[in-house]
Image (cartoon, rainbow, N blue to C red; front, side, top):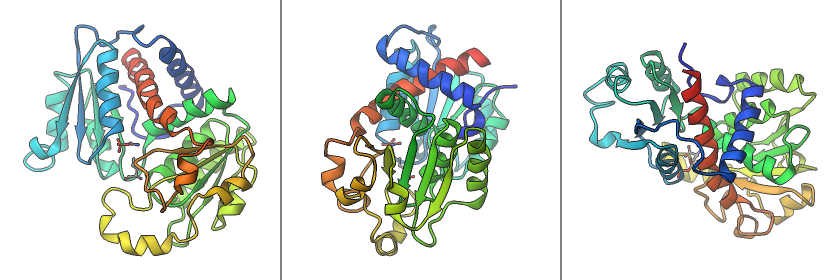
Length: 307
Ligand code: CP
Ligand code: NVA
């Protein structure tokens, strides 16, 4: 069975821990592993815009001795003239892995079901698991561990980042507190899954509408845009709905004094986070952005060994 990475818990907590450590080791010795020597090609497909994911996969595949083939679906047949299944059958005969940023998770499921090479989710409407690997690498670099820490996610908990924080951080042994306004709470199934995982670690999963409560004693404070890709038509309504959910200095003061601030980026200063926080001393967002490269290299190298 081909291993894929379509959502955070497609790997076990032990495998996640191994990938975090491998990413840190690969960061220290950047050109040490060449699983794609040949060179083999990795297809990196985008249905949505991207800066970090595009750059980090392109650079990462090159670092691993391969060639990245970046495909924007605006200029390919996928999604218009050709099905996902037929696209997978063409790609699997030529590329070593398939990386795809898309809308519905079901598209990724179809791609994986028809591909004998690993498929990696580079963000869907439901999950952003590569971002979480990078965030966990960043947390481990800053604290020397992940288990036993508390993360507070403030904002749109019904989106891809909310889902991935709940599940991936629970897998890393972290307690997760989520603060979201009414109508933007996490999917109860995702909360149930996070609670099931957290029980193995004695960690706690809390969902509240009170940002101060969520941030209290947190080691890590995170947020994300209020207007995810595809939600642009709701921008005005969302700006009203999320009033009071900005991560500002006052909220950071509820967290531990050593707390770090993370944001997957792109960020909208003055909306989900104040400029003072994101550009301040507790913010490690550039380290986090760089870690996309190292985390995804560890993931691709590991997937190459599994299949
Ligand atoms: N965080 C993230 O995925 O950034 P991009 O949308 O720029 O790829
Ligand atoms: N939730 C955001 C994440 C961007 C990396 C989006 O989907 O647009």
